[in-house]
Image 1 (cartoon, rainbow, N blue to C red):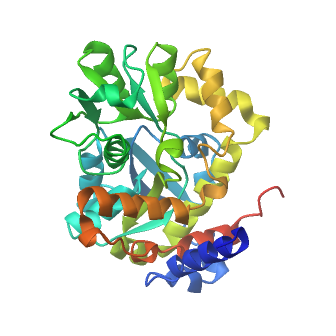
Image 2 (cartoon, one colour):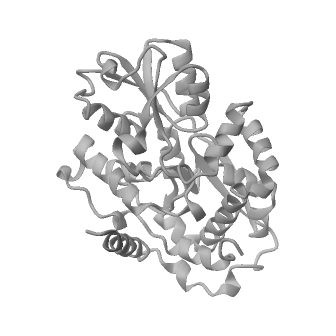
Length: 345
């Protein structure tokens, strides 16, 4: 297949994802999207790792308030807590690796739907300073968030490609989000390696830990962090969902705008407690396509990798992954984009 045919195929896949059952937002008349409530609607968001920078900037700049929303965001200590908060209604929307949505649907029978993307996988396999190759991880203990979702599957795939199998050739210990895993590696040299993303990966390398390679290089494109929710909640709160996605995209555009560089640097200092030179390195990476996707777009090819890893590593679906549209409904996202000015205008 040539590049043009490949792009066409991806576009068709995206359109299939956009035609899900929860398409009520597309039918909303524009006049219903603004000005119908005197007080903002409160949305509760759970996220991992940390609180999403676009949300924090959107709160600071009044972007969510402009869309008549009061967004309350709380970082989850691990992916199990994130999934639990969304499943039991303590959170309305989750931001995390979208494989968590797949796990909720397949392992817990939850009726969840992915609303948009946001971040590609900028993860790296980070190891202790005395380890310089993946085969050296044989017989070692490695850290993950949870052993059967998202970046743990990235880790298992990378090691399997080097002839190492979980349980027999190495051990996995679940220890929560990336900052906690790095701290554990600092405290205990027996924890040999973990998949870490920015800015934690940047801090780790500055502290002498070794990168054994990026996940993009080792396993290819991967749709990492995105927004997902319960389908029933999205249908019942379609207007709020559309407004939220529109505000999030606006905030992410500002986050990547060099005109407010100082504001973003202050945000990174406050939220991640970054200091130079890790601060400048994090900001430089922030500005590349290696981390944030423009307009929080969803990477269909990257999501196919998510499903393929779950099928291969966990044996889900008898090894044959389903099509992405099973888990996606981008009708809300498309309506949100129609509410805001095109990028660059």
